[in-house]
Structures are given as structure tokens and as C-alpha cells.
Length: 181
Image 1 (cartoon, helix red, strand yellow):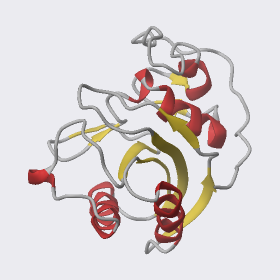
Image 2 (cartoon, rainbow, N blue to C red):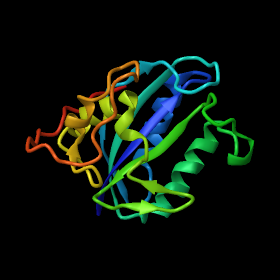
Image 3 (cartoon, helix red, strand yellow):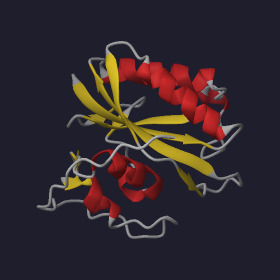
């Protein structure tokens, strides 16, 4: 079983209902157990496309699913929520649901269809803050820094400096408290 963290975002439709349905869908994934759910944060969108605010959260799973199989299940959950197929999406555009594999144990994967750890997570407050709720001591396998330490480099409006590209903080924080939507 691998410990996996999923980033969750929604800014179209009934965002709260979408997140509640997502939590239910994640709890029903095969060969997986939903072990944590962060607080929910309302955040401004990132990117050049004008759009409404997001609700962001993170989930923790214990799973026996291989990374690409898990990605397939996450894509199905997105599509059931009304997310457009990949070829019809506007990059950085609004979405009913966005699910990203942030960390999958200590794996590092770089494929066209999947990059783990998520390539921009260390620059995004709306990813790091919910993840820190679940486990501020989780370590980014490339940067060798904890999520809690990475969060210190990014402020909520996204204007903070990105985390350094190497070097690990010696502090190991205990897992964060799990909240509910």
C-alpha cells in the first residue's frame, strides 16, 4: 500500500456539493482507503483566464493501485462531475473538478500523462495548505523538504518566493489534524 495525497479544486457549479461527492467517490476507490480530508479553502484562481474563486482541499489515501491506474480512476471521477474531456479543456480555465496526484509515497514519475510529485505544488499555497492540514511532515521527494517548510515560501496570494530547489529542513512536523468539508 502506498500513501498518496490528492489535490482537489472546484470553481464551477455547486462547489461544496462537488467536493462532498468527490470525498464519497474517493472513499469508494478499489484497493484504497480514504484516510484523511483537509479543511476546505476558498482561493483566487491562478492563470490568465478570468473565472470565479475555487474551493480547494486535499485527500489522503492508502492504495494498492498503481499510479496510472489511480490516475484513470481520478479522471473518471472528474468526468462524472462534469469536467470536459482533455481535448476540450481551456488550459488554466474554470472546472467543475480538478484532481491531481500530488505525492505517491516517495515515487518520482515523469511521463507525458503523469508527473509525480506534482510539478508546481511547491509554488501553490492552495495546494500546500490543505496538504499541510493532512501531513505537514510529508516530504517532497525531489526537494527533500517537508510540506510545512515548503508552505513557508508561498503566501496565500501566490506572490511568495518559490521554495529552494534543494535542501531539506531538519524539522519533521507531526501529521496535521484532519478536518471535514
